[in-house]
Image (cartoon, rainbow, N blue to C red; front, side, top):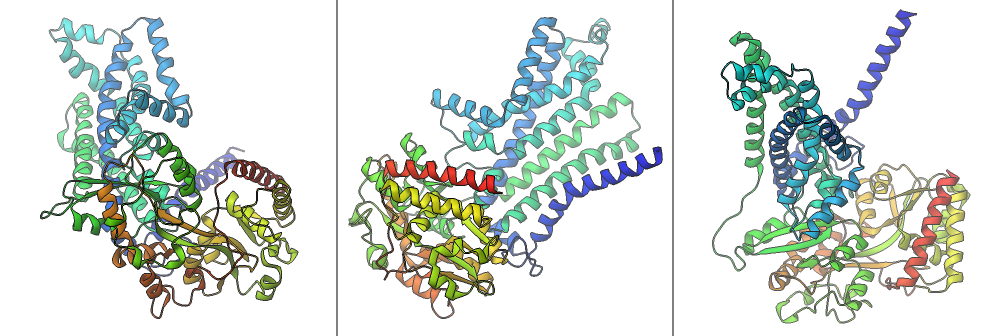
Length: 631
């Protein structure tokens, strides 16, 4: 029986190791992938490491992550150790009370702690950025240090410090020469936990940061919204750094002990030396990776431009090139929904440029959050496609300059889906039992209801409750009878790998899918679709509108627009760029998804209606409940 238990234990241990380490190995292997896919290895390449090193955003985030982790660890270790030693000499009631207070942050959900820190900084009007992130990290690391140090202190003879002072030691020497060496293992354990927690943290960092300060967790989160294998490269780099730290901390003391052959107390003290050395090495490494700026006098030298844009919605070089040309510093913050962006703007956070979608621009104009553009400072209008100018949400382009535009349609596998079915059924193909279990719906209330309304022959901007209810019933039928999978941006890579027959998708994402897999097609039913546009606008409280106008010109000019569109994959509003990328030899030659349809009278632009939006949001929540119940 014992032998069987040992075998079971060994098998379980192997399975646990495989469970924890295979995903890391998978990530490391795909960091050397030549292609952009996160699931299909197409050959060995270092291109994503080069991209990572050339990305100012990633290198700055790497510097921020480790500089904050090192500082927070050092400060939290000192404060936590001193606090633990002090509590050991306190009365039992106070000690028990403080131990419970210390445990509370670790037991609280991170989101609660994050919101608490955010409200604290807002209440005292502390501008969020590097310092607020550092303070938050110190605060949540201290309890982990105290928790590691306290058991070591309890194991000591309570008379140890008194004995040292009886022998002539000062209180400080008794602390540093007697107490600290005895509890060093607990101090080191607490420091390692604090360092790990700081490097790993996302939720608290996300809520307490501002002014474009981002750690790696925040950068990876925004990158994961679209296919970007640089995630694997930067994550692999972090794994390597942390592995080296652990190796140095564990091996250096052993090697030092063999050479020194000193007393046990001295060897304990020597364990602190490699830890500090590691911290210094990491600080130097990440500091050298941080990019610096400089150069001759330029028109906006020393000024700062604050941009609030979608994650992964800018080219590889446009920000660096603009900074080099103008001398300005660009601080880029990212959002993942128009509603998230609106909350920050409505709460008075100041940005110089926003890049919202059409219906949100309409809302911002109506509520007075935008300032009119100074067209005398703009020279980009004659470079833009006429089809993306003068749209209903801003008919005279008084407030907005188009950034990207496109459509919503059906991406399909030509080897699985008959084009005749698409032409005959349109969006109703999502109810065709022939494709049951082979369908993706996009997790967007606007676009899903657009599809349902268009399938039923209604306007996607309808305010008619009966028509909205019909669309709801259509979607419920889809999720209940078709074994439909509701996804977000994972549809991009999944369809590039041909994992489903068809799905609802944005045209820019379809362009990437078709470029990766020649078996994929893009179809827009004649009943109409959403003709969308994301545009650059300047908020009323912008601190540097003149620099904002300069960036709008730069992003709309050929070089900036080309870099944006070729990298992101969405259709440029610059007519020449659009023609070049879709023309002979262009990145999207022969890909119909890249060129938005402009000749169908059934295509519409979303119109913002607060009441209708609430109804659709509620109905979409009920559709998702029906989908989960069906599953």
